[in-house]
Image 1: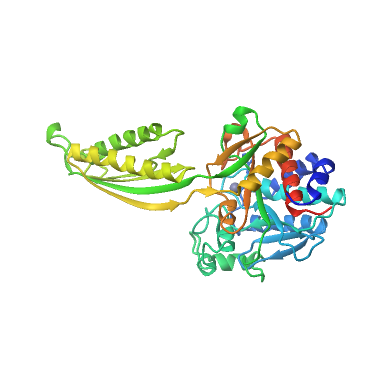
Image 2: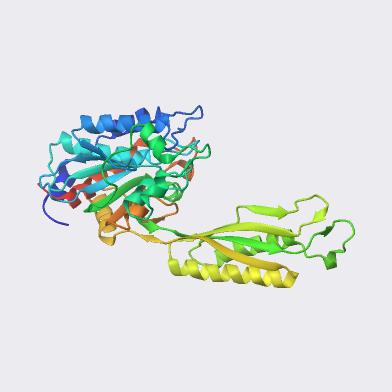
Length: 420
Ligand SMILES: [Zn+2]
């Protein structure tokens, strides 16, 4: 990309797989659950402990630590050019209530290992390297997900995040202060040379194909809908079949037709009818109304638009045929994320240079990187997870795969940061 640092580092610096694995095991002790997972809800005592451990490790590695006003932590390894915007990497340390040891933690600890490995070989980079811990990625305690990175990218107002409350009415900003991470650095507003995020795939593709590294091209867009189907209630014993306007029967046919729409488009989008409310939901009354959700996702915006049109058409046809009223409300549009082609290619080249098999892929889930992609050149590096399972206690990954992804991260970061 730029000068000679990349090639030299790529040849000479090796990350330490044992140190990386040991750090994962140590971090996983914080909030450990009986089933082998972790529970570190955002801004809980366990979140504080994991932050404290990261800060202690980063400072021991010579980094200067800053915390911004929403609690994002930046650990900086200085570069030779103090004016160069940092090359940044990281992820999150908060988890789902019954989360795994690698979702989020891997991206943070891979970044820390890059710093430690550069230190081992005394390699200077021109641009500084920042390892970041984003606040509240999971979104299972307060209002929504990827809070810290969304504020950083200017996509969500800081005040709204700080004033968000959890189900017990506890305010985000108060909890942030309580755990000691209400920092005084302004959130965002500085340039980033490149942002990389390592993450477990959270799906089955890499494991099935025996490929240790994925170069992530972007993340799927999502369109979500709430559908209301209205028929008419009636007595389950007295109203003949031919006279019924059964809203649930219509809904069942729509769910089947929506599933078929997914298979009409190649490569497949994913379409899910995940929540249904039936009125009156009585054993011996014909259902008069249902409200159900549709979640549709695909990496291509045009396909997602075509899917929306097809989904609407099949629901309308069924409603008309059955004498039902239909209302479709779009409740969420998350745009397709496209990562920086130059950085994605750097990931491919770094993997090839290190002799590590790599394939292009899309992310099925949202990540902090999708928010940062709005303000900086961004790419992600995936590694396999066992059986594609994530957001679960049995989430697992191998030391070898975690190391392979981290070696690629080191090389792309060194190349982007430049230097010796
Ligand atoms: Zn994650």
